[in-house]
Image 1 (cartoon, rainbow, N blue to C red):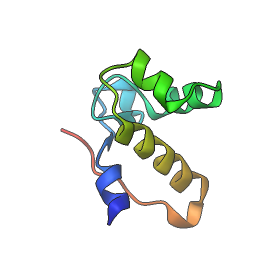
Image 2 (tube, rainbow, N blue to C red; image 1 turned 45 degrees about the vertical axis):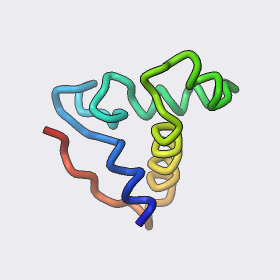
Image 3 (cartoon, one colour; image 1 turned 30 degrees about the vertical axis):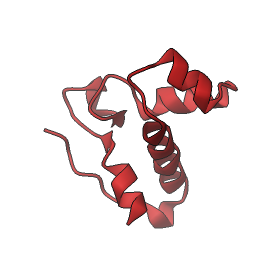
Length: 81
């Protein structure tokens, strides 16, 4: 259940970022978040540099990536309006 609560933060909207998974319907994609983390930025640094991002957004991005990496656990997301 906690997973579902986090995943509502990840939206897919054809009008935002060409339909790529984004954070809370903002122009900040899951891929951007993962690239920041992969570059070595800590969650605290991301939160400081991007004040409109919350810790749960980071957690949701990581959870989404983990689910995508495991094809047996892929769950459909609802399209944002």
